Image 1 (cartoon, rainbow, N blue to C red):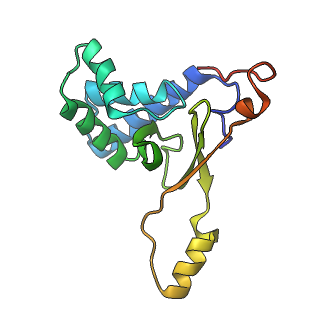
Image 2 (cartoon, one colour; image 1 turned 90 degrees about the vertical axis):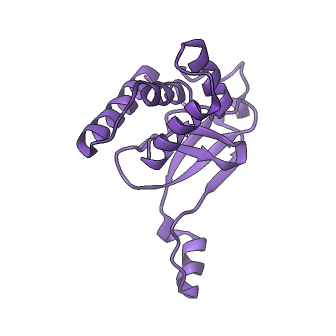
Length: 166
């Protein structure tokens, strides 16, 4: 899958596809995709930026969907548990999963200037960490890969780059 968040693209298509994938997965697996869970995923899909739980709670509260922190945290926990979202450790925030159709080992590219976060695909079996684990007889169950730097738009500067569609 191409890394779209750093490029101009049909962002409304991102949102529709993400919600449709979650709805389909929940229906196929007997999971309750409540209005609050759906709205939290929609909020996460609205930008290619990680968002904190309290940022999400502010939107939910303004829309009358709940004003207590457990409302946001429960929805985020559901979304992360079922692979619809990821927690970005470095930022203590969340981002919608852009590869919600299957198992994967994501790496997150975080722009330190514009704060965009992109989920990139990686091959966990080809990494130096995987080789070291195999040599030690260790089985990796979860890794967190986050890289901070500059996205193409911030490298070029606002005058010369096209802002990604939001």
